[in-house]
Every structure is written in C-alpha cells, then in structure tokens.
Length: 92
Picture 1 (tube, rainbow, N blue to C red):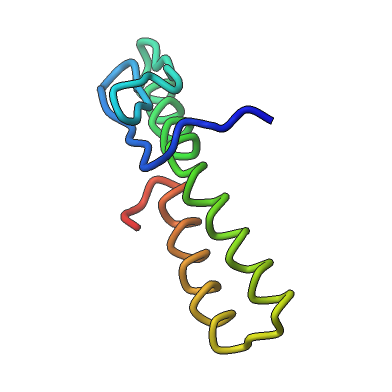
Picture 2: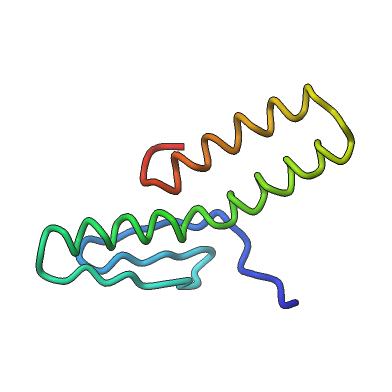
C-alpha cells in the first residue's frame, strides 16, 4: 500500500473547502451557492481533515487492546473522543 500524506491535515476556505497538508492538496469540497451546500462542504472537509487523526486513534486503541493495557486504553479512548469531535467540525 502506498503511504498517505502525513498529517496534520487542515480544512480552509469558504465556498470551496480545501483540505491540505505540507503544501499538498488532499481534497476539495465544493460548497455551491446555498447555505446548506456551504455547511455540507465544511462538514465534509472537517471529516476528511480528521482522517490521519482517526487512523492514529484506531491504531492506539488496537495496540492497547492487544496489550490489555487498561490505563493506556483510557487515554486512547479520550483521544478517540477528541478526534470524533474534530471530524464533526468541532475543536479537537
């Protein structure tokens, strides 16, 4: 498998949301003319921008589960909740 562009990824812009990392465009989310279309573009861009963090959170959870490390699992779950908030457009 080819390696993805490393994070962090960021969503910027207004009507067209650009998701980029390290000078590379990852995705463009077009908003259109309506407020609903702009809202959807922001939501799509937030979800895409959170992808590297979601991958890291899932890998941490699996690592803790494999090691049966409950203290680290609690930390991994806290991180996962923060990533979910970021993916939904909130501050992480």
